[in-house]
Figure 1 (cartoon, rainbow, N blue to C red):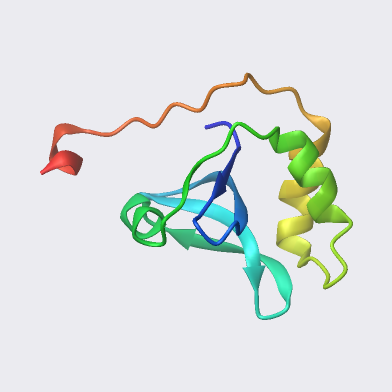
Figure 2 (figure 1 turned 90 degrees about the horizontal axis):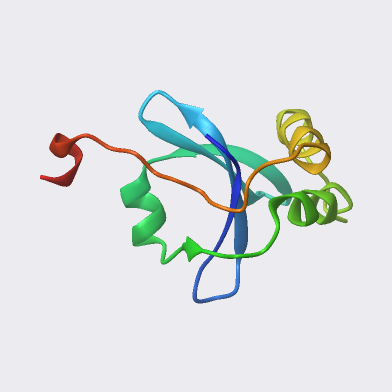
Length: 100
């Protein structure tokens, strides 16, 4: 899975950095620092997030300079995203049972 930037109606942004089982690993502000949180696609949708066309590499570079700080786990993901080449498209795959 490639990283992507998501944004909600409050203009809060987050970066989907990977997967863990059936959950997505999302980097977003939590308890004063940027942290990695495992959430389902349904939770992302419920929080009003939609996919943004903003560059994940540019977002990662900005997140690394975040004044409130970044957890070590988030930093590792962000450094990889900031220095990697990914295509411009994110593709979610799911089984038919996910749609029921």
